Length: 227
View (cartoon, rainbow, N blue to C red):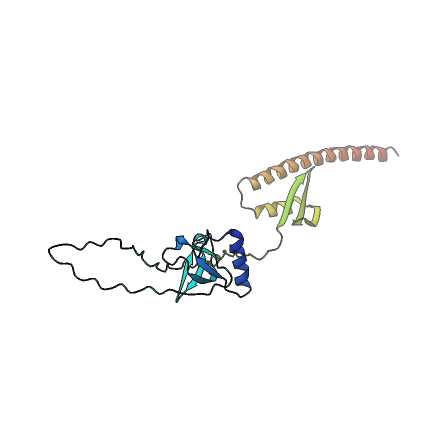
């Protein structure tokens, strides 16, 4: 029987489709398969060709062995599956001690193909990604601003982007109490310096007003005497 030149890509695809349909296509072993060349087997499975070139699993007798496409050909129609059991070799007589035994024209019998262990690919479970703990979202930040401008102290409050209180005027004494709660070097001294300047300006203005008031009272007294 002509064993052919091995399975082509299209024949391998036809075998894959036949296996998917529940059939087990028959194949014949080529010369590259060794001593079983010309024998017929059944394809029972196609494994991953990326893992091994011998991905065509054939049932031959009681064995299920992997072969490469070059070791197989599509069996002609009408060919029945037959298995040739290897004949037991006759027991050789022990050689005479004087002369060694020479065997001529004895065909060399290749060693029977041993079943290669199947390599099963096991998919590793995907590594678990570390779940980052989500902190609960807290309330928006609160900002209280004490400002001084144009001789006035103002306080404003804002939470996030929402204004809770627009700037409103507070007394200098209240501003000084607020600053006293902030234990930051230099802040209270700066406020006290501003208040001292305002106090001095207020006293000068008060002295000026007192002098003007004294002149007005003197003028009024002169006008009263002229009556």
